[in-house]
Structures are given as C-alpha cells and as structure tokens.
Length: 76
Image 1 (cartoon, helix red, strand yellow):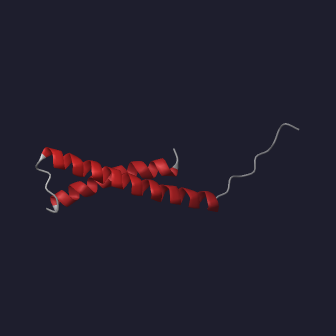
Image 2: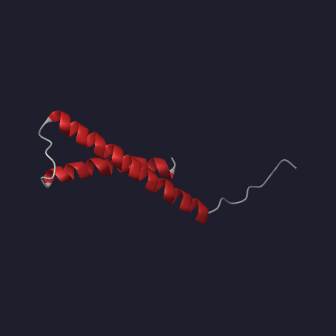
Image 3: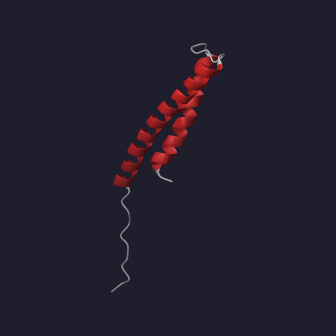
C-alpha cells in the first residue's frame, strides 16, 4: 500500500470521528436519519481528501529523503 492510500483510510476514519465528536459537543444534531447520513458522508469525504493529500506529501518527502538503493544488473 502506498502512503496515499494509508492517508486516505486514516482520513476517512478521522472524518467520521470528528463528525461524531461534533455531535457529542452539540455542534451537530444527528437525530434525523437523512441529515445524519449526509453529515457522516461529507465528513468521510473531506477526511479522505485531506488524509490522501497529507499521505501523498509525506510519501513524496520520504522517497526524496530515502532514495532507492541501486540494483545490480545480472544480464551482462
């Protein structure tokens, strides 16, 4: 798995957690089904986008700082 897909998965979970946390602090009301599902889906999508972008950036940084070792060619 790439850093982007790890970030995406973590972002989905954090987006859902933040929506539920906002409900616990009375910033959102999740008592009606349709608006609750919309809020959870929007939170998951926003979290996924932000998590994927952060994962992509961190993955590129890691690859820049840790270049791949040279491979030996055995087809001489």
